[in-house]
Image (cartoon, rainbow, N blue to C red; front, side, top):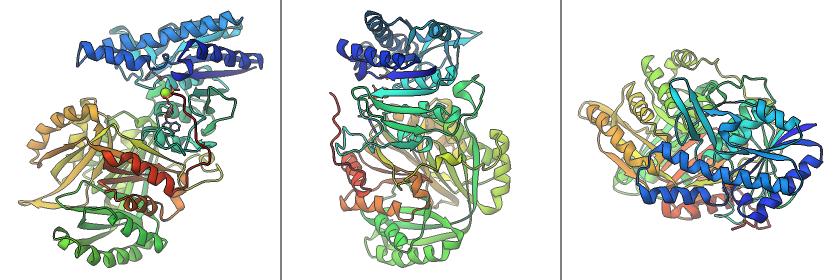
Length: 604
Ligand code: ADP
Ligand code: ASP
Ligand code: MG
């Protein structure tokens, strides 16, 4: 007899009829000879409604009371689903997070799961009951703190479900939702989005953190860490949906479930060379032209970084394999004079190269939403007296370029700090999904704001101090970019550091860094929340030259200006103006031919 965890989202339990349909679906799974634990979300838009109510009472409701309020939504749906099952003749019972023993940290509104007691659920399952568990909520338990109801963060029921599957040792976890599975992008924005039959956890982690809300990124993190077979499928039809392919199951302790090592690998590449074009015009088409020429030469670029513009100009830096350095430099040198003629400000466009570059990265799903991890990397490098040249982040990786001669020191300091060994290869099953398209999906995030700190002194420890402060304030930083351009302010060499945070936290982030920026002698702090981030993700891009060029070209054709660029091995993100966001997503989705022939019907 197999044990299945099934999770039904808000729309799937949005009305009495839908709850009854869910009950039927659960009973079919039982009839097929399975034990079933069900996790449900609050009905329809209940949680949004509760948030609105709270905001009518207070602009800054306390996080504890928010948890008390929001957790009620799921309590309604578990009771109703359990009643629907009983009414249809299936023995069932509902349990809140606390009743199950979903134990979390005490960090209200974004608590992480520490462990799940399974004895009670297992007992009821063994008695032939369907157990209906409230998603999104848990209970904090520390000797010095009272029991508190906590929630896991918006969209957190997915995380409850996968964590429960891990704790129960379930055979699989099925996420039922209002779309046919994971699609190439959000069908509400691009109706031509197409179903993806299978996707690796690494790809899904990036997509989920870049705005594809179909899965909570932390759910993917748990599936990846514990090797849980995960499927996302439609609540309305019996189609198979999308398989999220996890590495094979590892026996792992369930203690500190979501708090295991935040970093699972230190990766490095000594064979990199950096080419930067400084002071090139800040207008559509420039990146497309540069990377188009590189692609024409079949040159595979690795990191691509463009930080915030300065006046009318920008810098774009990229790394290539050392062996390709001469060719890449020649392309950049040939293109610089063409750009130079363009505007008065760009008259000083120049090429800057550095052959002695190493890339060093920390990688791991556990760093999602944990702002202290990047900060710890920066401070570890600072303590080892390693200067960081460029920084590029994704949600699951932070990469820095450093001088090659610092690499050994950097590696041993980081291995020590994060208690991991160096550069293990990713599980082979992650790469064996075929076919491997260069781009699996695209995403848009319209909820971020960009913050730039101008003229940060170019010395070890600066990034460390800034991001440690933000981490201490509990502010999650997303895309961090340290520019290539070094500008002399008096006798001090400086660089800009730009990053994105959730719009709701932008003002707090600015206030948090203002003091230290002043103390370090930095320039202005610029905040812009009229931005959108468009990204493409795919493991196939690792060995395919020209993916960045195609993305930039698609944006250029739409006359969309790229404000910042950050990449990891499997994703490329561009910041664009907020108003250009949806158009940018459509253009990119089209450029990689991700569309299908049938429109996906999304229920209201
Ligand atoms: P649930 O209530 O079932 O958890 P959500 O609203 O949280 O559902 O997530 C499903 C929604 O995610 C879809 O209706 C869709 O609009 C959105 N979405 C965003 N990106 C994607 C994607 N790549 N694939 C599928 N759905 C996506
Ligand atoms: N009801 C919660 C929310 O709307 C949790 C979830 O649906 O996953 O965020
Ligand atoms: Mg959801």
